Length: 223
Image (cartoon, rainbow, N blue to C red; front, side, top):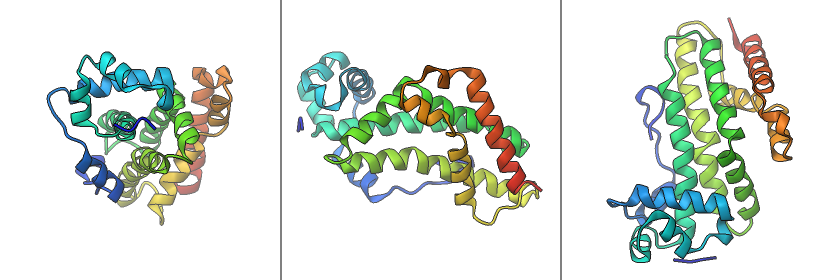
């Protein structure tokens, strides 16, 4: 080891080439999830460079041989941890969405989940690590984008297409509209979180931004 899905309502999301290549190099087995859980804790605690194979194996309760057999490269393990967490957050949000619910209600729920993940300790630490490692590890940024912002866009776009069909909103470019909503949910909160301003995590601040995002989105696209 080098020290250096599925969319809303069953829509299949095709793998990109980086995802397919990564899957070909990773072997899944009985202790796969155990390895991921241990690696997640170590990466968050020590960062990518500071995380050693010995520490990850110890935290996961597996041998180094088992770790190597699943992940031949530490970077692959880091990528899998980041992407798995993004997919988990997206799946949990999707499970709460009622396709027939009013658009504003669905957007409010989606906005709360988007902000919740981005503001979480994991979301912030992973974002910082992706930025810090982007020059030496460009595949990390691409994988994080595909499992994060791109996944959010795809799932929101599928829901919005149904709302368009019901006549609740009028949208010509579904992908752009989905991206716009996700960005509206970051207003003020993202910068404050990146710079460590705790007020960004206060529920009233999150509610203020999400409600504003929903109101602006509906003012632009609502029928």
